[in-house]
Amino acid sequence: MKPLATTRMSSKGQVVIPEEIRKALKLTEGKQFVVLGEKDVIILKIITSPSMRNFDHLIAQARKQAGRLEIKKSDIQKIIKKVRKKS
Image (tube, rainbow, N blue to C red; front, side):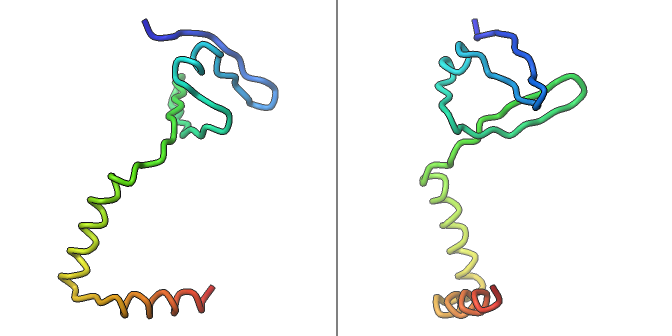
């Protein structure tokens, strides 16, 4: 059975995730969440960093699109310089 516990909200709006759930999910200090709320339901979704493998597909797609558009490395370097000047 999945861990189940109760908690309450403080006057500052803080909610403590019970220890048994923190341990079961291996949550550590500083972990970040997306908070979704609708009607009487609140969902905390753990934010995880994507692995580098996830980026391989995106990089391959970007390279294909750059090839189709005939974008050269020098074009990208010029754009970067232009954008940095605006900052």
